[in-house]
Image (tube, rainbow, N blue to C red; front, side, top):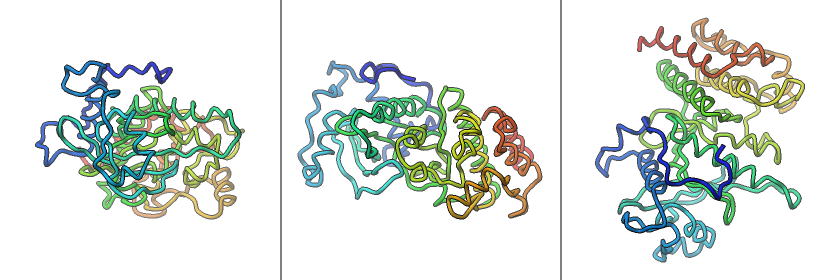
Length: 350
């Protein structure tokens, strides 16, 4: 937890970002968008109110007046004035997202241009005085704090004015749109995702909304990334949860509080459901919302090997991760990763 947003320390560098270290030294024309986004974040983090670094301080950056699309968007102009990137401008048509709108943008730093995603978060239709925006702001800071973890979509900047927003690396596809093509691909994706979840938990943060739409790919990488870390837990308290999470991936505790509260084993369940999808290409349950609720609460998953030829060890991993009783699940994402990694070592010999 980062505390009050007004006291955020933008001068302290993050931990070593191994997930893009090998891309940082590439030439400008081959640099990964993920590396570019993180490079911009590093620049923004090192800014002070002084200008002797050669980079203007945030409060001295003049808004761009050269883009006609921007001039027609007061919202983008307002965000540009407070963002930690320079010359933020539109770069495509906005699209809908689980939590609002996504606007393709470009920004500049060190004389270079990078593509980003500007995410505009919707407010719930509820009474004045709600703590929604404060809770969302806190969770966006939590996501940003783990954005340097290998396998997490990095957050370059985030703020609450003129409405809640964040800038992230660009995304090209979700796991729902780009499933693994081979068993080897599925095993590598499973190992990567379980390792990332264990790291996020080790940093004191939960995801709470794992499904195929919250696992994404960035341009130039085949590694799946966890997206929208922790945001589902904010929105499910203020909006219809099914608008932000695919119901076949929701654990029993989301349907009935007698099964407990959201905790680390909630993410273990979500990851187990994702493993089912990764290896079978199917959702674990289908039907109406009422049908899915009944199945989640009363019927364990069918085993992945019932769908396609897979080892018994994978069936056992998925069954344990998605146990209805939380105490029967893996009690940590690290334990889940260990079993998935052992399976990969056996089947991939790597």
